[in-house]
Image (cartoon, rainbow, N blue to C red):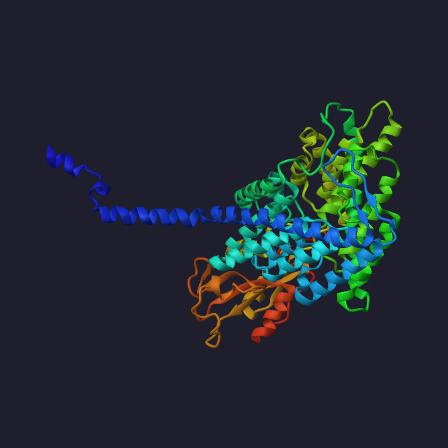
Length: 608
């Protein structure tokens, strides 16, 4: 009887305490490796909340020194029922002086210390994710925050989201450096950092968590695998920021503002179409001004001063477009600020934003688009109410929906904007009309933008997941499976192209001509790579992305290939500029590129 019971005793019960402890320790280590990014995302959230407060403090000082100190102009406040601007003894005449001085200081700071800090920072974060393995130079967030505080504080028509995103993304990148994380882990924390900074500055945790994974692509694709991490970072950042500023939304709305009459959908549909048209025109104006300043034969350091002065002259005529303009948005929501002037302000704000940022100034584009959308929405309500007086369209409601509709099309983020606008205003009762307007804006903007030179506002976006270097390994593995089966018949990647790439080391154009995919066979002189792990061999900033390793008859993912060996054929992808720099730095000669008129791997044929 006892012998029978002993035979049925589980083997785990017969192990010594030391064996059980070792097994438990191994299990805990495994759990830690699988879930440590969740903790890191929470830490990034703390950085995001504190970074938002740091930038807000810098911006307050910038406004005191430049807008108030030089120009004597104080823009109306948001979050109060009846805001009003304050003009000094000189009226509007010193606004160009303040904006020019701010532009000059910004240009000297940026182009001396960190040229990549110019422009709108969110696009730089998108580029870091797709093309740079999540690497950001530590100096960039510091320069970006100070330069943006000067630009916006002096009256520049830019937003707070770009610099705040770069601060938190830079903090996440520094954390990754300290922890020596792999590039795939870095990218996740880059998205978490973006969500954290934006969640804090706009008090919109859910919307910005979705925005961070949606902004990467120009279609409805997203980096959905990173959503748990962006959610955690956004929630923590929102909580940290709330300890300093409280929990009220950014904008104050009239009470009981909600969608209750289906007839209003006609007006919201018109708003969605109008938002799509404005969203299609805006990138052409924005980047057209940038091209003009690029051709201007003066040092880059002074171009933001020229743009700032011109923007200040515009601000003299239309002080409503100076700085972020959030107070004027608040006036459109709660103080009866209506009329045909609103549609004029839509395009004046686009021009002012372009002069500020496209000249080399520093700031974001989301804030100006909030303004543009609110003014467009209030104007549509004004026009519809004149045409259908019995319908009683609400300018405040249309302003809220317009805020989301314009950015849904311009930035190609229709889902995130629905929630962002609701959280920023507390207008949850307007979700239904916002869904209609944002969807129409997205469709109209894509249709019109495809015919224009600059189809979207974020240039670093790619069309779909397989167009990003992050996902090129899947492309190559799928291509090899098709090649082995003799079934490779796609327009995106032809059999001769792939054969040429492997046989003679050519290069293929990828993601719309913005980069290359190429091969490198490791020889006895390649000491920089032989014997090193793939993660460490290409972990430097701006290094190419190691897509896969061909070893013998096997195609190996970089994470499972082990140390690099003599004879390994490396399949690499890189941004076009990084590709050229890499070849030059290592003295590598690549056979002629393959540009036979076919679209390269992942290259979109639907847009120019």
